[in-house]
Image 1 (tube, one colour):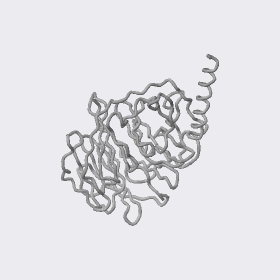
Image 2: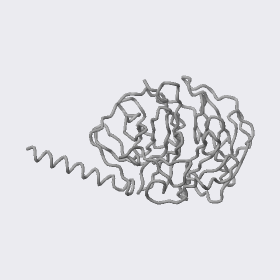
Image 3: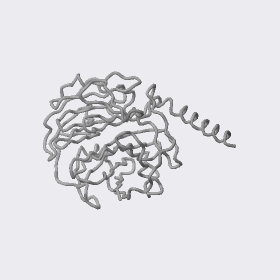
Image 4: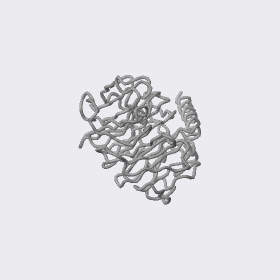
Length: 327
């Protein structure tokens, strides 16, 4: 009986390893079947009235939301319940804002007018302080800006993530344009977010379904989440087993080291610690979260001092903002 049980456990482990083998190339992280999941850590609130919104990003106490059709960026308070009406912060010179990224000081916007252009503004609005484009862009899928004003652009069509100086000139020493397998190479970046001195990149290429971490001061230099976890490609499911990600469309970081992954294919928000360990499925049905996140396009966090992050997700298909507060 004992030998049969041991053979069964070994077979299950081998099957799970086979399922995850295509997710992270030769750097696949080993599976750990003993991780436990914490359910019901968050309370959930949906907010309607955001029809036409295309992207959101949070800086300080404000949520900045882009509206492509009207050419607007609207700002909302992120720490109030419910989210009140937009603040008067006009951003001029925009035509079709699609993606936005914020730092403590500026907001960067991808404007899909005649051609993709990145425009950078102060948080209080007004006209752009700089605008630039890159002829190599073919399908921008992610945007981030650090507190020094450097801008990071992910392009899913061209399979790269590139960094630019605050004046829009390329920072070639941080160029991540070489696609392929392994740490420091990207194939289909779907979202990016800054986490201290590193850049988190979610990828949803069929051969690389994962999140990896890149140093922003060295080219093609990956950073392990821990000694045994180079990539985030699986999480702990409700049954206690490792489950592969399906379509990680976005990623965000909390100031406590938490990493949040928006998986459109699984309709889930996944939470990991800074070492890549799976902590929770934030929006499980048990916690009252939405059952459909297929139309969700961006994720970000609001961090109160000393508290866990509040998570915001824009569901562009339904004009909703989903919000999870730690209990």
